Length: 98
Length: 388
Image (cartoon, rainbow over all chains, first blue to last red; front, side, top):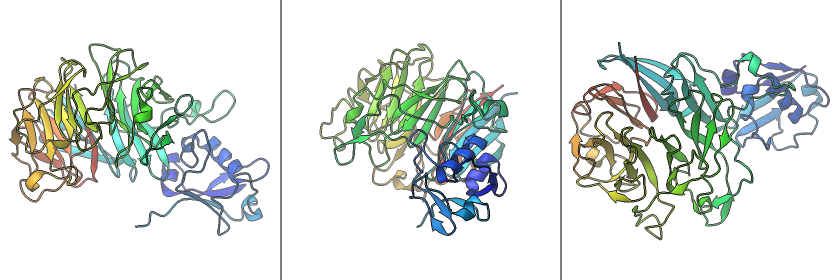
């Protein structure tokens, strides 16, 4: 069981309180996590990655074990701590700045 | 007893304002979709409790919301439990899937090169006049999409971009289909307006479109002031009884056509400035038109800091300022293109929202105004519904 933390607006959109527990089949990658997340909450399709291209939306970031995984290959295995559920995968909205 | 419902889209959510037919006391509900930009909401003429809303975010993209109970509760279309899975178990979640048809193609970019079309957001939703499950979406980058299943899925009508789309070039505010008008007398005819591209008409239900910009002049915006496309049309409006007559607020100039856009003529007349965004037509008087003059394209606020709606009762050229109840000093708000609406009661109600968060209403056709609410986020859109 892996754990995913979503940003405020996406938790509201999907009606989620707190972390999202997910079962991921096979290697735990960003792509596999998002596939599982969208399967469980279809309303999130298109909000984290684009419809069609499945590219990460430019102002969404993926943090894992204090590292930015946003630009790493979507099929790269995530750290063991994420795969084992001891650390959550953070999906966040980029800071607005200003 | 008749009720009025105003659907207000703002920079930070949607609000629903309701009143009885007297239109003196208003109740405010919301924000809905708090923190998200809501470019537009509109109810179905065939079922006023069916409302479509465009919710978007620079971070998380486009969401389409739908209410089937007049705005009390909302859902993304297709999100009931039995609808969530396709036959193979793959998630649907397609109510926000706006994918251009076929080969995406290109349009003119800021540097003059060709640039691929990229969907950004839905600016305007126009429900069908007869079928609550059918609606059109005007989007940025400019295109029109259609749903026939209540917003669960959307398909582009690509004939619009075939109307010389390769020449369309975004302005500073982007390039979006922001106005969609349905002809109540001819189900095959629709009009759209696109910022920095112009006005377009279909006579075959959206399969093919043609530019209808003859007579527009853009002396300071285009190298060819009479170009077939490229004009910055801010808004067009029609009266249902006379759908061949259109009124237009262009970047500069207020225009009118009497032949469904074949030829336009200027009707700015005695307006203090003919720059502005919204334009609308009285519900019962086809020649009574409303605009809100803005000082200039460089200074988006009312001239002299006086918020004035201008009304023509003769179809343009002769305009009178409407000021009773509106701030006449130190007012520096703007009124955006989709932020004006009329109701169908008699006397006609007229409403508009400002970038300062006020929504003003008039229950007497514009003779007098009151602030219905003052401190909303910047108002993007206002739509009025008269309910039985």
